[in-house]
Length: 267
Image (cartoon, rainbow, N blue to C red):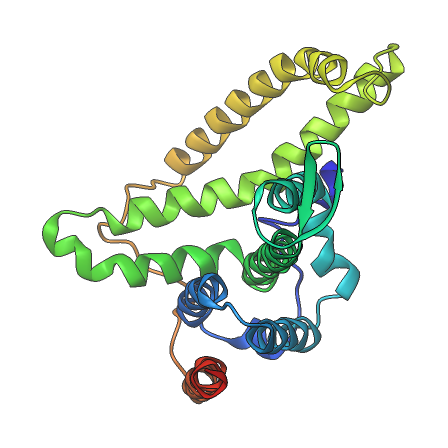
């Protein structure tokens, strides 16, 4: 399960998504997330689902890799769907004792499931097609106007980039510790959920020790390279908007107009 978490990972490539400016990807990922929360009708879901599939195909990222991020969250997705099925009132489909399944509950559960899946894929594609350094530069550029009111744009961008970069590193460390514990007789796969959670406690101590050690090593490495924040800092590569970003923005705006325009026509 740990190896299925894709957030923070990057897959090199030359696809359209790889060549987009990181600011374009960050902004449009946020816009798509908002749009996914706003859609309500099935035609809108079909169009947003088609867009998600198109993004996976043009990203050059293997479909299996794009969908890997869903697997660790399947329990949450299933639990959310079940809660909607059994606790939303409406037209009953069938009833077993006090438990009643309604048509509205099933429809709401399906919509919520597809919505969360699209959100996960959209966030995963952004990190899978953007290097940590490009992500840092993009976030910093977007926060640059807020420096006038005292917002430390570079420091926030650097912290977010380091956090994203450390996710796969810490996951690999967790997997290594679990394998070491399993070789000593630890059991992480059997028993009820409480015993499984309890079995993870011996993993947390060495994981925290390793995380703090890596943080100290990173701080020393940054200090040895005379890192002093954004003041006087230059970059080997600078990011620029291109015609590809402009065309992507135009297509995105037209697509969203089509999606929400369809709602007006249906109603």
